[in-house]
Amino acid sequence: MNRPLKLFVVVGEESGDQLGAGLVDGLRGRIGDGLTVTGLAGTRLTARGVVSLFPLEEIAVMGLSAVLARLPSIVRRVHETVDAVLAEKPDVLVIIDSPDFTHAVAKRVRRRDPSIPIVGYVSPSVWAWRPGRAERMARYVDHLLAILPFEPEVHARLGGPACTYVGHPLAERPELKAAAARGPADPARTPTLLVLPGSRRSEISRLLEPFGATLAKLAADGVRFEAVLPAVPHLEAEIRAATADWAVQPEIVSGEAAKFAAFARADAALAASGTVTLELGLAGVPMVVAYRLDWFFRRLKDLTTVFPSIAKAKSMVLANIILGTNVVPEFLDDDVNPDTLAPLLADLLDPATGAAAAQRTAFADLRTRMALPGDRQPSDIAAEVVLRIAARRGQGLAVAGEIPPRTG
Image (cartoon, rainbow, N blue to C red; front, side):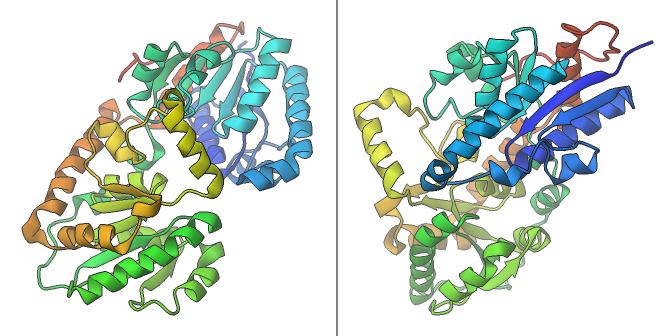
């Protein structure tokens, strides 16, 4: 009789919880009830029967000051998680994203019990920042599940762990596929400009002022448009208050469904750097990207001019990185101003310039590069890899499928 597969999952925030839930679904689709899962769980993994060691809110902190304030508690939770892994002796330990926490757990588990296979789901951005991490990661991670198509080649070149591209969850979103498939806009309608200042209070506070001034300049220059600002629900009230005196009042919508509905009608976007830029690219929405760093990371950026080996990325926009060319214009810090941003947005809103069409053509290539063969799902490929890794340690496990070949 085949014994159950014992999986220990460590996530650090809700985005990792979503990937973990997909992985559990993929595994159960292959081995049914022959699976037991323990570890750290958010809402989705909890709904699949995983009892979390402690609430994720205790470790899901953002910002340097918040991390420092909670550091003793976080360190204590790292050791508690390591002890739980060692007591469980799983067939596979899967660490998902949140590398400051999950990799701290993995390193300690590897030192104390090297026999436990460790799979990392979501690679740290070694292609952009501190590339030496890849080689160090190979000491404690047996296999990486990458969500960006170029990452397997990067890890092979940098001496990182074995790495398989399993697909990005955003590439499977039906709302983004539907937005990308829409026909040409009616030239008689007023163009829609999305305003996306970020999802965190700190970045929103740095970008709302220049974004509002950019809308004002567009209007003063005679550009015809309507603005829509999708807000994260817990910051909606603050955003409404902060934009109340804008010369151009955006339509503020809240929640994921409203955001994707706005994507479906958008002609262009002014967006903060982050995951939303990949969402826009997959939805076929042309954009200009901007970001202002806080004081700590501005100083760190200055250091990279002295020590260039610690920063490698030529772009902060994922679509540009995947395509290997800077299709999307992007601006940082003092360059984030109306005089820089407004003319480029005006070009995107005017079909006669061809600027929007050029980005849409590139975004079609982006979708092709991110697609999985045979319309497979990320969770299915991830499950195949985990089962194969588990078979190297466990006996009596039913393992189906092969590890997909390394792709770049």
